[in-house]
Amino acid sequence: MDPTTATAAPARAGRREWTGLAVLALPTLLLALDASVLYLALPRVSADLGADANQTLWILDIYSFVLAGFLVTMGTLGDRIGRRRLLLIGAAAFGVASILAAYSTSAEMLILTRALLGLAGATLMPSTMALIRNMFTDPKQLGTAIGVWFTCFMGGMAIGPLVGGALLEQFWWGSAFLLGVPFMALLLVVGPVLLPEYRAPATGRLDLASVGLSLVAILPAIYGLKELARGGWDPVAAGAVVVGLVFGVTFVRRQRALADPLLDLGLFAFRAFRSALSVYLLTGVVMAGVSLMSTMYLQSVLELTTLRAGLWLLPHNVALAAGFLAAPRLAARFRQAHVMAAGMVVAATGLALLLVVDPAAGPGPLVAGLVLAHAGISLPMALAATVIVGAAPPERAGSAASLMETSAEFGIAMGVATLGTLGTVVYRDSFTAPPNVPAEAAGAARESITAAGGAAAGLPPEPAAALSHAAQAAFTSGVNVVGVVGAAIFVVLAVLVYRGSRPA
Image (cartoon, rainbow, N blue to C red):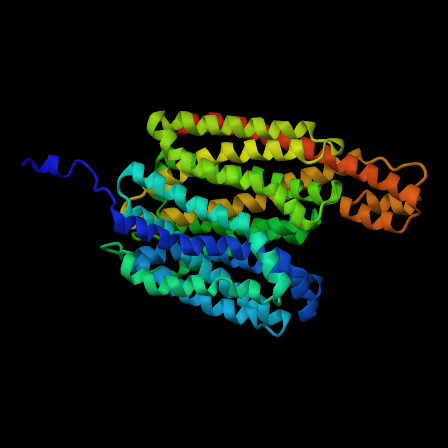
């Protein structure tokens, strides 16, 4: 037999690999559940632990700070010490940290345990994606496996509010953290049996200086972006972003000089890889801003309860999950570049529908636009993940997966900071105080729609209704503008995706 013929086709995954994929879905589902449930539990947590406003923000944010900071390091560490090994270490650490978080006796203790959860989470995400890359070498099967992985993640996001609401009605807030412990225990039991081990065949020592540089590049940048989004212009927050950029440049220079770098910059030589990362970054930017404005619109403009607002947001999560599963099948029938670009055009159409969102029409136009937008972005996101992980050699799959996750984290932070700020600017410019509202209340209402609600609560019925109506109309204008800007970005990204996905 001709040896070249014998090795021409990649091995196809069998029952063990697909069962192993179900095991890898456990941490994915858990991380999504954990993120969404905490938002519901936060008011009770703050009240029970006596957390002030600043501590409450740190309870919420510290997880994503640490997660983003350590993704690159943990992705590369898994390549070196073994991806299954790192996954199991992370699962054990996540389980222990979850128990500590559930039984925290002070706000400071919960902040610390949330930081530990972020560190453990940073080991889980790139490890699962890298193991999928090792288990599914056939490109079509790899695309399907990644689609299933994404579907599980979005499933966790979709059912998180429902599961969390049910838990918090029956148990104390710590149950929200204990939710993941059985998942981690099951992973520790079945993981060694069903998951293969893989480590790069020849690696040098981990460059601790690069680890430090990556942390002081990512952490200040994420912190600064979040603070700018939360409080507007602040020299300290802006300075943190600049510090992160400076150390980021230093980090890149060091990687170029090292024989065995922490981050393989050679991956950026592939145009398709750069284009795929752009998909993650810019999609995160747009959809984070749109999601923020949409959630606030449902609750502050249409005045829906948290549960009802969550139910109205379920359809777009279902559309996203369906798109993830459909993407590899479409890519098998049509050119991948065409599928990705078409998805972006569909997403742009959905966001353009936000231009007609109006309180008098109820949630229908918003939900329809979000369904189209999420169905559209699911196609390029699923295929971009396949490009990112598939473009990397097997020994660098963890590093590639960590880049994908880090890009998404930055996109979310940037989206809230930019499009969220745009929505605020439009709100303030569009707000017109009714003549029967006192100047003090009108001035407070101009700051934000949340402040408008507080100002209206202290007024007699007629001026209160007039003030609320003015604030709701102004915020709706912000939703309209953010939708149009997001649609324009997606149209540009469709062109970029089409050109970048072609062979160089």
